[in-house]
Amino acid sequence: NAGVMQNPRHLVRRRGQEARLRCSPMKGHSHVYWYRQLPEEGLKFMVYLQKENIIDESGMPKERFSAEFPKEGPSILRIQQVVRGDSAAYFCASSPTTGFDTEAFFGQGTRLTVV
Amino acid sequence: QKEVEQNSGPLSVPEGAIASLNCTYSDRGSQSFFWYRQYSGKSPELIMFIYSNGDKEDGRFTAQLNKASQYVSLLIRDSQPSDSATYLCAVYSGNTPLVFGKGTRLSVIA
Image (cartoon, rainbow over all chains, first blue to last red; front, side, top):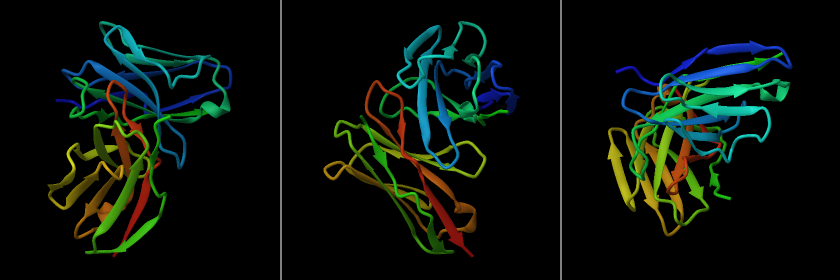
């Protein structure tokens, strides 16, 4: 049973380009969470999705950022017109359900560098 | 605003000693508490979670929860250099994703 798969592992974009980050949850997991981590910082929640639905996007910047989790295929975090401040590690986690005893497992992350 | 506070460290302990990592949280309605370990440049790995007051043991790890004091800790017995990492405390408060602290950096000195 493969774990949470994220790709690419490293992504370099020039300012103004678009960045697309992909996350395939563990088999049987329908809940996906995106977090951003800056150097020496903790994980900051961005968005929570369940198949085809955005459940909570309270941590997403209002502009340039969007996320989806289609019926088929991976979850996508899209950042349009990237700026240097978007450089960070973006982690995706998945869980089979929600609840106080639900374990969430993380992918290896995508390290985005904006030059 | 739900907050999770951890001492950033570094916390240095000699090999074989007990490492004690602490975490406080602001939301009294928080239901469960997770400890993740993150090696530098790697992804967070789940160590264990606890939701009842008291202690929960798993191998060399013991999680302790005191809801009255809004305090959760992780003890690592017989610390090894391979335990050197950042330890992240995360809190589940119901219908919201996990809220993470900034982590405590642990250094186990051989």
